[in-house]
Amino acid sequence: MTGLDEQIELLKLIGNQLKSRAECLIIGGSAMLFYGFKSSTKDIDMIFFNEASRKRVIAVLEKTGFYKKYFKDKDIFLLERKNERLDIFLNNVFKFNISPYMKERKKEVHEFNNLIAMIASPEDIILLKCATDREGDRLDAKNIIEKFNINWSIILEEIEWQNEKAKKPLSLFLYDFLLELIELKTEIPKNVIKELRQMNEKEIEKIR
Image (tube, rainbow, N blue to C red; front, side):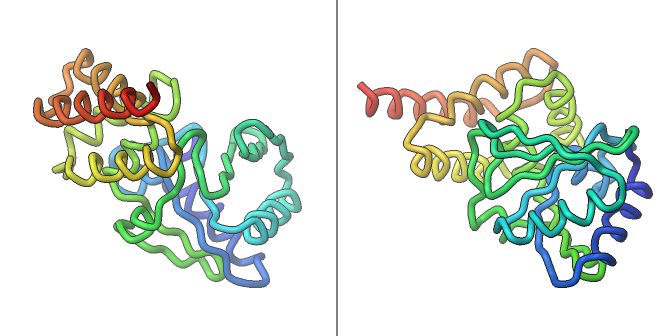
C-alpha cells in the first residue's frame, strides 16, 4: 500500500531523473490521495499521452529497482518494487480512451521537476473506474460521490463521447456500475439512470 507522502516521493524521484519533460494524468486511487478521499492505494495509476514519454519514465523506474510486466491485450505496463506498484497506461484505460476534455477538466497540476502530473477530476475518476471489475473500485466511487458534489452532466457527456469514439456502447458499463453503486446504498440521481438507459437503448439499436 502507498500513502500520499510515499507517492509524492516516488513522483519526485521520477521527475528528478528524467532528462526532459513528460506529462501524465493521475487517475484512480492515486488521484484520490491528492484529494484526501482515501489514505492509501494499492497502485499508482499514470496515463501518458505519447509512447516516448512513457518509455522514458519506465526506464527511470527500472533503474530504481522496479521490474516490468507487459499486458499486450490491455496496452498497460505494470511495474513492481517490493510493496510498490505502478500501472502505466498509454492514452486509454482498458476500454476507455482519454479524451481531450479529461485533460481540460484536471483539478490540480503538480510539477516534480521534469514530471508534470495532472490530477483527474472526480467525475473522470468515477467514469474510468467503471472500466474495471474490482470491488474496491466500487467502494472508491461510492466514497467520491459521498464527499464531492459530482457534476453528473459531465459524466453523461463524456460517456456519450466514449460511445462515439469506440463505436461501442461503453455506456452499458457505466450503467451497470452505477446500479451496483445503488446496491451499495450510494445516492445516484434518478435522471442519470434514466438518461443512461435511454442512451443504451439507442446504442443497441444502432448495432441492430
